[in-house]
Length: 278
Image (cartoon, helix red, strand yellow):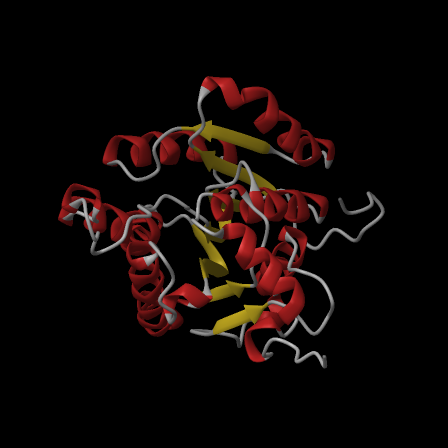
């Protein structure tokens, strides 16, 4: 957590809307931006049994002293989206605007495309479509909704989270990988179409990070182990590393970064596994 003495880069009228922010990258970003003065709205979808854990994470956001709004609802449904926008309008008032939209929704189906012995266990058409919407096309839905309400601040930043899985074939990751590839394509198109409005859109490709979303992937232990060996910096990526990069993209100095897929991984994606001598 950032020290309270850090500079305040944002005003209370600057809001971050974080879709998927009760853990992992979304929560780390909420904590980072709040520490630098930004008001934060976190949308999450958690069971009642997870309330204590979720609230502990939000305590650091509240401690920063700025406005904070958490909404536990479905960000992917029309009704959920309308309720989120209603609550956000009330919280930010007439002067408040969305300075940063972070798409950090991690809701995907992890099944193989083909199952050797049980066809019923393979990925279905509806499961594939649902994953593509949740982790891909819903970014556009949310950008359009905020544009329709004229909720974006001047020079606002839109950030989506992608992974190496957009280009790699990993076990049972086909639906999520396809969604990430779709997401990257949409980021490029949004970057071009939003630029005349003064808005920017980029994607962060995080290194392999130990998050609740990663732990749902089959073989995540091996992924974490290989990432630690592969990373030239000698450690795995942390949620805070990614939050730092998202914070930088929200600053005015980053206004000329647009339509990029930015690796935030300490060099993991360009490094081969080290060769050891016998």
